[in-house]
Length: 102
Image (cartoon, rainbow, N blue to C red; front, side, top):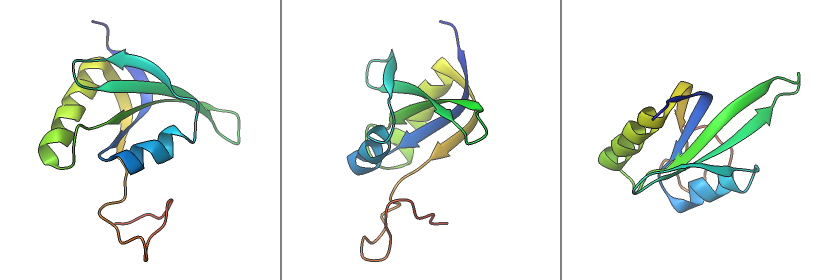
């Protein structure tokens, strides 16, 4: 299997996180494993640069499912950067989509 170079990889843990990102771009199925589906798109920056991205949702919340998703990610892709995004168990009365919680 050939490992695909990619600019960024995005990992989510729960449906609401995945759907928010998936519904914001034109993602296409790129790789399907026994338990995960990887979606690919290209973002265009304001300056016209192309950024190749891949999106995957871990099977569940927690360190073990996230580690398994990352393992499958690195079996198939060579990302320059990896981001784990999500609601971070945020309180919806205090946070909204797009907030950065550190």
